[in-house]
Image (cartoon, rainbow, N blue to C red; front, top):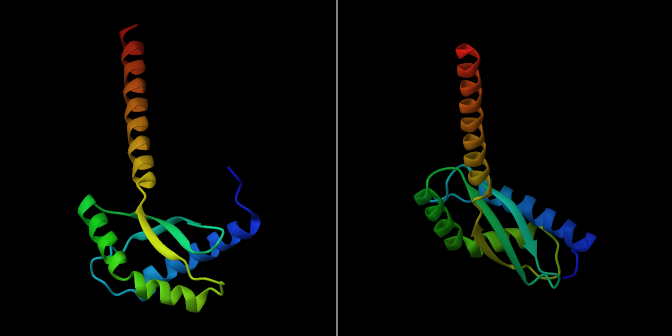
Length: 129
């Protein structure tokens, strides 16, 4: 598998910044959660397709509603992206729900719980001696 070129990395970063701006400031759809962020973007080298990974702070219903709202506004988002980013082709955008932030928060909570249990077990052992 070929590594992503520097040019493609720059394009991914620029598209990610612009998608974040468009989603947070331009779209007025009430289905889109206010705490929606674009975590990553992969644009194909021919600039025809783009996969945008979206993270939504909230429950599963909010995430699903946000995806529906983004799909509904896909034409508007693509048009705004074409205006703000000077590319040969404006890619077709596919939105994918990214649960990595939520997963990380849950894992962090579990680690904290285990650490709290271990420290309380150690203090119980010290008190019994």
